[in-house]
Image (cartoon, rainbow, N blue to C red; front, side, top):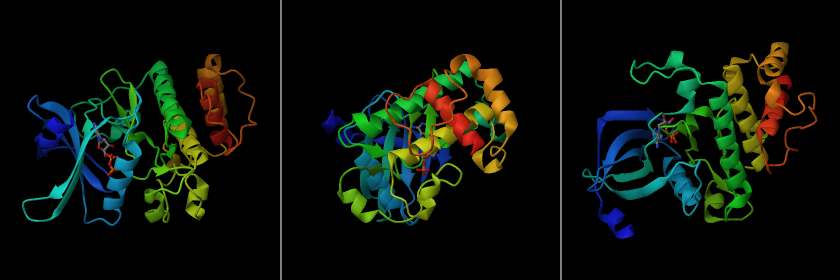
Length: 283
Ligand code: ADP
């Protein structure tokens, strides 16, 4: 309950660091009397933009729920024992880490939890999980949201490899002049390689921007190269790869008429996401 959460203690230590991002360090921790396993994201408030990202994340995630969204358990904004501001977000813990480490296991340093290659069926199901979150945040929830930083390290995997989209630190509420849009409307959004090209030219956060990142993410999942590796563009073997490996899942592989920005976010399904792969691949 709210009252229990308000007074709950959360224990974590620096030896339990599980990840770090632009604005934060993430630790495995234990919440409340039942020691529920959680991920504690402690904002590095020295970094410019960290406090904003805390606000964006709270604002975006408040009141939304989906089986493929990472669950925000609680948030804490306080003063630490040295008298400095302290802000942290507490999430449900995702035992299988992030998708990036599964796609590029050779880069994972620790020998523990070294991910095995994902099966084709697992990759498809992760792609569908991510697509259903996009459909939800873009149009099904009360205040539609653009994620603005979709990439494999922001897709977390549950015990059974169900995908949960995380990191709403750059997310924007669409279609309304909300408080959050007022103070965070400038600056380049997203991550190079995943961010839609128009974001680098001052473009507004949009559903289409997320779909662009989704296309890159799916492409990376099936081809195994990072977008920054430059091997995607004009790579004819991509076409043969997609055709030979995935043909039974594709309704019409020759249909490349879906152009960036024109695809509807309704009913994204396997065929749509693979068309997206194909489109981004031949760009
Ligand atoms: P930032 O906003 O600073 O980029 P993220 O939210 O992306 O931080 O988290 C960084 C990393 O921490 C993730 O890529 C992931 O490896 C790990 N992480 C974050 N949240 C969780 C969670 N709920 N369960 C397990 N690991 C997590």
